[in-house]
Structure formats: structure tokens, C-alpha cells
Image (tube, rainbow, N blue to C red; front, side, top):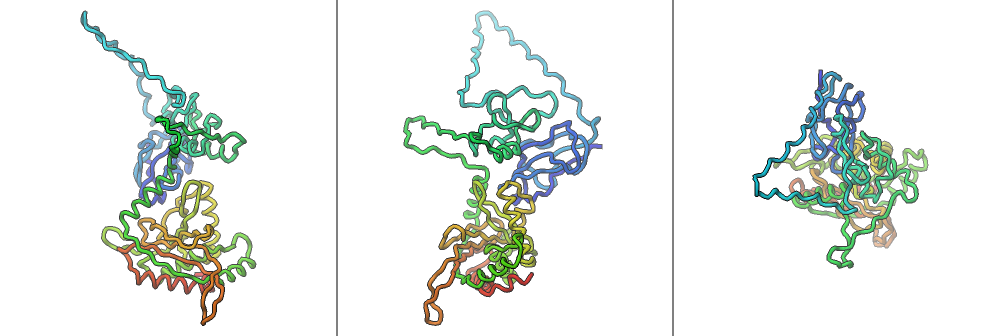
Length: 430
């Protein structure tokens, strides 16, 4: 008996994902756990796996459409449950005969596309597999929308890529594999077209990537709907850096701790005392989250993603560091999982590696706050009437004024400063 395949909860922050491509066509056999489709969120592309084995009977949504968790996306069943093939198309009826003297309507020949435009698509296959989306890119080459977008972003000639999809269609994975094995000349430079008005001094525009467009939407929404305010504090990091150096010298590489791991751990421990900052403003109420899951902003090709440390306040710092390292590697390789990118309740955005003096970040909805971290650098400070050199790092909290206020955030930064300046507790477990 046919079963409905529901959209699983992929952890999309927006609540739903957009179907980019069907990896299995109607009539294909599928095994339990086999990928059947790719969905895109704001920042990642994730695969949906078949929860049961059988034959894919029907696609219930089409590429470009969105689905939330639990929404039906396909039917799977036995081969005999496949719909009967569609009847052959009927030949078009001949045009009606015009009365004598009446002029027949002018029939225009189709406009000839310029050489730069896509060539017509190759004839589709007769089996239902041709519902897998594709766009013609020239010489009969077909590619899924996400593969075509990736090719444009990387200036890649898709005629060089072998397609593994139905009918030889080029899928996202084919482009990724080709780029990873790119030979000299595989990625070609594309010269911009001159402006039509002849003004060659005008700079050519660059189409924003899907990630950059998603960032633009989310950050615009954040600044338009969240009343931000900012507070900055200075943290002396000498003891934290010394303890980190000692810890890393005693443990293997897979347990090495970064400064950002220490900041995330301190941020999580401080949130225990200030739960309003571990909250969201939803429908005129403040929802305080039961867990403290600290996200970290990660620079990737074309923008920024976040990875999420679970129960950061309870996890040993070596575990936080190990998990962060693995998630960052997956994010930069384009293999992030739903668990990697979803569920954050507070954010840390660290630009310490980019020689920055001060940094105020934009809140990532629906969170109430984000901590911006600048570079720790040697600074002359006055202690007990004497000028001494200390390693000082500025941290700035950006907070939602609907949820919290300046006094509470100032006290939070004071607690964060205490933890980083006397860092032994960061290494003592939960």
C-alpha cells in the first residue's frame, strides 16, 4: 500500500526548506535511508532520505516550492501502484478555413536567440523521470537549478562536467566533485559584457550568491524589526592565553582549544546567571530557552554560516572544541548537517583573527543577543598607578531592547569578564 513521505524536520531556522532537486524520479526504486531529494535553507543544502523502501510513485511538490516539517512531499509504494502512462498527445487540429477575401493571420517565425543564450533542451525521456528539474545550458547539456547556480558562481563551463543524474543531468554533487578535482582551465574566467549604452567606465554588476541573498534577507529583517543596543567591555586575556597554552601542550591535537572555544564556554556559563539573554521575543512574550546552545559564526566561501554547540555550559571545553572543529570543517566543505546549523540560543561572532579593534554584530533572529569579539592585542594599561602591558580584548554585546536593557547586559559582560580573566573554571568541566 502506498505511503506518504513527509518532510522531516531538517532544523531549518525559517521553519521550511525549498526543494532544489529530486534525486529520484517517479518509477525509481528507493531503499530505506537513500537520498531522494535536496532541500535548501537560508544557508545550507540538505538531503532528504527515504524513510521506507519501495518505488517512488509520485512527487507531491516541485522544485522551487517550499515545505515545512511534516508536509507530504512524495508517495512510495509497490511497482503495480504506479499510475498508468499518460495517453499520447493528440495532433493539433488544423486551423479553420478562412472565408474568401479574409486575410490569414500573420505567422511569425520564432525569434533567434543570441549565441550567449541557452540552447533548446534535449528531448525529454518518456518515463516520468523527466520531472527532475533541469535547465539547458547549451549543446543539450542539462543541469539542475542549484548546479547551474553553482556553475555561475564559480565561472564553470558545465560542458566539462559529467552528469550523474537522470538522463545525464548535472547535479550539485557533480559540480562539487568537479571543482574539487579541477584541472588547469576547468574554471574559466568570464569577461563581463560592456554596457549597452557604451559607457565602459561603469563597473559590471555581480549577481549575489544564494548564501549572500539569504544573509541580506535575514540581516535586513533583523535591523528593521529588532531594536538593537550595544555595550562594550575590555577583557584582560593574559591568564586565559597562558592556561590555553598549557592545556594544549598536555593534550593531543583533537583536543586543542582555541580562544573562540574559551569565549563560547565563558559566554554559556555567564548565561546561566542571565537567562533573559538566552531567550527570544515571540508574539509579545519572552521565551527563555531551556538549554544554552551557543552558535559561532564561521566564514565560508561567499558569506557566513553558523555552527551550534549543544549544551555549551555543561559540555567540557575539550568536547566543545572538538565538536566546533568538526562542524567548521563540514561547513566549509559544504557538508553541514541540520544539527550543525540549527538550535542556537545565543551567538558569538569572533573577528579576532582579522586584526580588529572593535566589532558590533547584528543579532540573528529570533535570538535576543550576540557577542562580537575583536582582536586580543598588547595594550598599555594602568594598574596600581603603574603603566604595564597587558593583552586586552574588546567584546561587544548587541542586544534586543524588547527583551533586556543596558544594566542587565552590563552585568552580563562583567560576569563574562570574570570568567575569562580567571579562566580555570572554563577547564573544570560543566
